[in-house]
Amino acid sequence: MAMGDVLTMRNGKTVEIHNTDAEGRLVLADGLSLAAEQKPDAIVDIATLTGACARALGPQMSGVMGNNQRFVDQVVSAANATDEQIWQLPLERKYRTMIDSYIADMKNVGGGDAGAITAALFLDEFTSGTPWAHIDIAGPMWSDADAGWLQRGATAYGTRLLVNLAENFKRR
Image 1 (cartoon, rainbow, N blue to C red):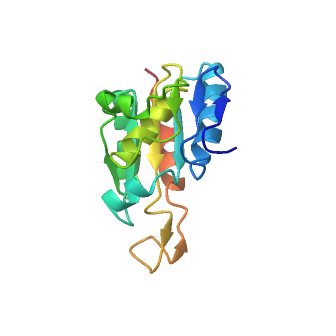
Image 2: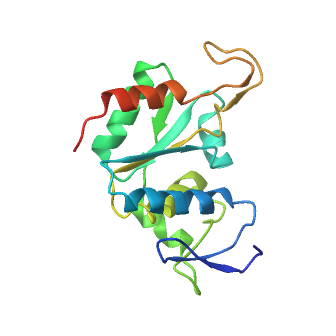
């Protein structure tokens, strides 16, 4: 994969590569497409997707965005129940133009502004409208020092949140 390449994704959409360091979202996008094909009640993904989210929310809080407020509310509720700090960022549809491409359906990055939001808008293109939430754990996935329940090193942030979400999931 090189700058300017155009990839055809699992769901048939084309993506122009504008940043070769943003390859994780390409894999995640195909994973979301595969998951959506199974017609689930909802999809949640968790990833260290953007430094932008870490810069905005710091080292102890993740960001959540999604295409279905009721499901995002369930994610936030699970985070609150497990004491894993989370903050909802808007999935601002007006920003979708930031990932427009002249030669493909979209670019794999949106530029310097609203990086966490444009990354989530990119991922949403692969959910086929299934209720979906993305948890960006770039900040709390690692801790330089003990901080509450977060121990120094890899924190396993989100594990308890996902278990709680699964145990308490309410269908639409």
